Image (cartoon, rainbow, N blue to C red; front, side, top):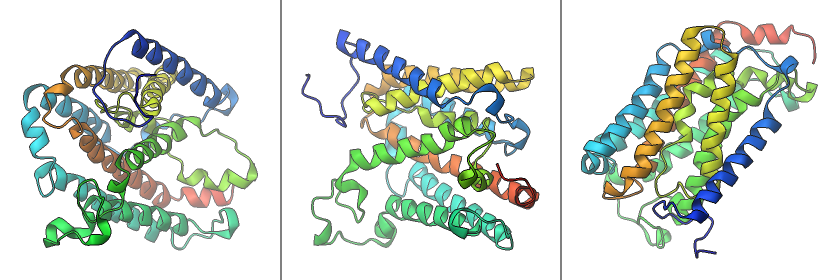
Length: 324
């Protein structure tokens, strides 16, 4: 109707159309939430004690620091998102740390006899996770182009940033797929995975973090300015709040409720700031680069949780558990 494609980036505007669209997507998000929420007898323990120590404050820091940077230091934020600058390097280092933590988890799981679908052992899926993280790291680094000072070969003509990578041939589509998948795996799946699952999928439960992990990873539902208009982004943003409200209601003590409320409130406040002050950024895509720091940090937290679970003998417990 307005001449915008499904994945066109443009500054948010609050016309009647966009307001109705936002309300409609909020309703759609609630329907998704209602469909995915396990019934009461299928709810898993929230597992707050299983979260990696110190990672909830990291989530708080990422939201607060990015919001303050957009308000007071938009030029600094944009400048240091470039390759080989502080924030750009931090994204690469976070992916490297995630790779190392997953490798440690795979090493810990190497002796397990626990069988997954198709007879695989836990170390193999973790190896697949490592491969995915490695590919993301290499794409983020443009396969070492900037560090090695390589020129872009003719094969990569048409690359939007003239770099040795594949995702910038279709930047918007790749970014949308990457960011949405991160939210689905690290926020939605921990919330939606039920206590009892069909036998064919029961063995995969060792890889699913507790529902409270969704709060740790909740910042991934934000950081939108030019991409706020994407239908998928708004749905995942609202869905994150419905999940947070659900976990807030389930929380058993004040500290759990306080942690949920603080991160959800900061997500909302920071997103309002991004929408209101995003135009001050020299490049509107800077916030997508912030998300590319938040996602690896969440993967590191997942890797730490997975290693802790494997080391504590949870795999052995599942091996001896009855089939579901």
